[in-house]
Length: 189
Image (cartoon, rainbow, N blue to C red; front, side, top):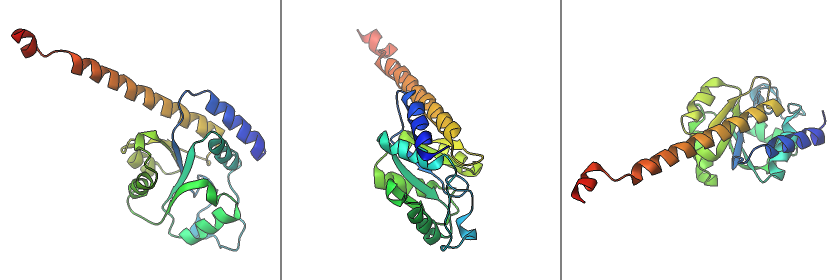
C-alpha cells in the first residue's frame, strides 16, 4: 500500500472521531522503523514501516502535531535516518536520548516545549513498560506489535476518545456534586 493510499485511509479513520489529540508522539525503534538505531550505520538507507509515512502525513494534514520520544543511545544515527527519510522537519519535538525513566523525562520535556497537556497526547511504542509509565502521566498510550499501522491508529484514536469522554463524564459529576448545597448551608436557610 503506497504512502498516498495510507494517508487517505488514515484521513478517513480520523474523520470518524469528533476529537483528535493535539499531539501524537512516536517511539522510533520497532515503532516507526523495524530496527534498533544502535545496530545500524549512518551510511545505510533506513526504511519505515509500510504505513508510518502515510500516517505522519495524514496527521500533519489534519493539523495534529507529531513528536518523537526515543530512548536510543545513538541519537546521531536516529537524526541522520530521520533526515534521510525526509521526515525530520515534521516533528515539533524530538526527544532522542538514552534514559532509565521509561520515557517520563522525554514526555516532561515534550510537554515543556509544546505546552500540550498530557491528556491531549496520544503515544505509540513497542515496549509495554513505556506504555505503562507514560499512561500514568495521563497520556493515552498504545502498544504496537509490528510497528505503527492503520489498525494501531484506529485503536489509539478510539482509546483517546474514550479517555476524553470519561474525563468529561467525571467533570460533569464533579460539577453536579460541587453545586449541591451542603447540609449545613440548607439548615441555616
